[in-house]
Length: 353
Image 1 (tube, rainbow, N blue to C red):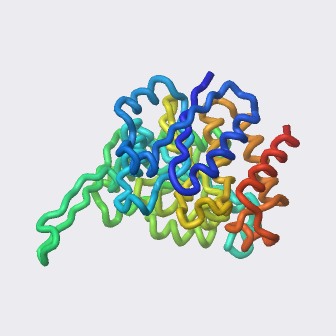
Image 2 (cartoon, rainbow, N blue to C red):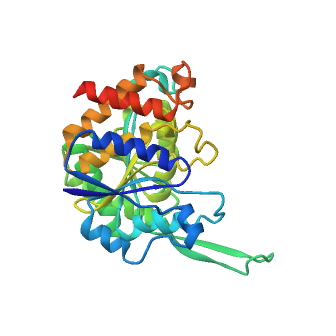
Image 3 (cartoon, one colour):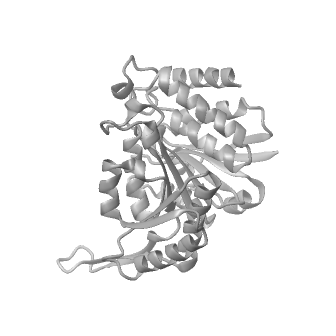
């Protein structure tokens, strides 16, 4: 039995998490879902972010975390969000942020003349270093002489393992191209390290085409000819930006899934749409990103057949099923509720099985 920690979190998180778990339970796999109430409500009620020892419990007893979203305007500094999501990424060493950006329906892309075959992007974002390591500070804050410093951290070990993961992924899936996004023409030291290590790793995978591009040129080229790219590996900051660009090219955040992964260890899977407090409780949230994150989790847990079935069900749902308001401008038709889309997706999955 594989134990899954479900943390629905804030805003629309509980709405999509309920549907995601219901769908995953329908497979009848040896998975046990255990719910935890960590989020803004718990934090505001008793000050709990994560209880002592929870990380160790995850490491020893759980196979994965199925995560909704965190973020609540009642906690202006979002201390609870940093202490839950970012803490798990760093303390569990979830160094791969896996972001597939796949076009499920031609109508979903804003790019003229591009089709499903042209937009099959997978991003490998380094998830534990870079500018998000939290190293820096402020001197003379609030004065005219204020100085703020943010330090970017790049280690050979960190760069090598994310590059290796990207090449292995491409090779295992019959892909042929891996691209590095950096800014090595200006950021000479850290990004020079990325260039050198990327070249070393690519030499270990001679069957794959490897190229490095400056991130600004790559962002432009993803609009111009996305079909030229398959797997893209990059640092934490650039990955954060490029993956949202990839989502915009393939239908938006409502169908954008992600995995925060350490191979062979407990890993975390979440939709990337955030808590969206403005639509929480209104039945407008799109549950498909949560479902696709569940498919990534199934694959990580060793259930590739079920993962593929779930992805196919989502594709069919997008093509001819009910859709939430975020997809109506692309696909037309009346807007459906979160629950309606979830029920249809479950029925579609059942018919595929």
